[in-house]
Image 1 (cartoon, rainbow, N blue to C red):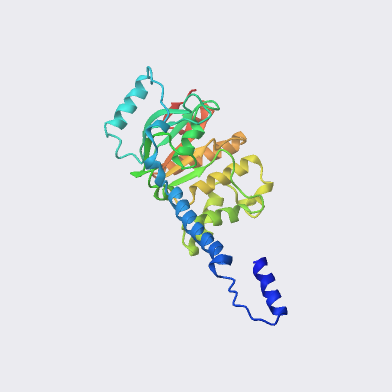
Image 2: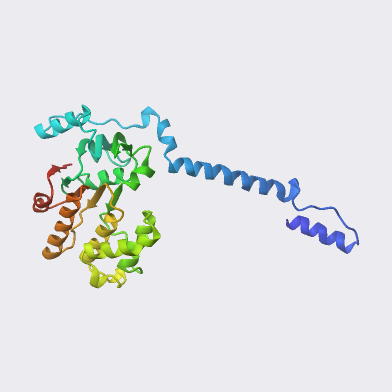
Length: 300
């Protein structure tokens, strides 16, 4: 471009009118063509990555070898047999040999988890830090790829139908994913719109969430000023928006006082009575005994 401009200025001083088109191939044309081609190529590549197209072409040698299972408890072996025999087809959530091995790890974080969870059940994953509870949630929600195995939510594959799976789930992460500058009500209205709630019902749904989790007196305050317990309540309320079929709660009562914890327990029990399934992680045996109809202990 600079060369083209210099030539144009020189010809202008000489009184000539050169025929110098800045868009011809030798000037900017080839660069514009390269930019347009790259835009199309990288857009298509991004779409394929988003829909996990390349996961079907993963070479066999890239799949890490899992160690032998060894001896299993009777209940664990019975559940594995139930899932693999097809008797869990009516369950809303099914995991078949679900496994996760991180590149930096020598042993699997999750090792061939087989589990079926029916409607109206609260299932607990109990274990210490590093046992694989959060890794299991991250695979089921699509935050991290599955190393081996399969999972189905409402008969939709987590591997290939994640867009549909996301429509059926609610998720309260281990660490609160909230904005410090938005109020509690604004959070719920935002996520209601993201969930596809009709605009005329957004305000009503947000009010329901605020009342459901006991946040009425804090609903117009910025979430950055909330206590740790109220932030967990807000994250849980967000996971309830849209009446999802399965709700994942990753240590939902962390930082709560006993009164707030008991209140949230009652909310979770009411959700299961409505026919929805809840999967929660916890360090507390007392919490799992109070809420869960079934429970699994995850160990390293």
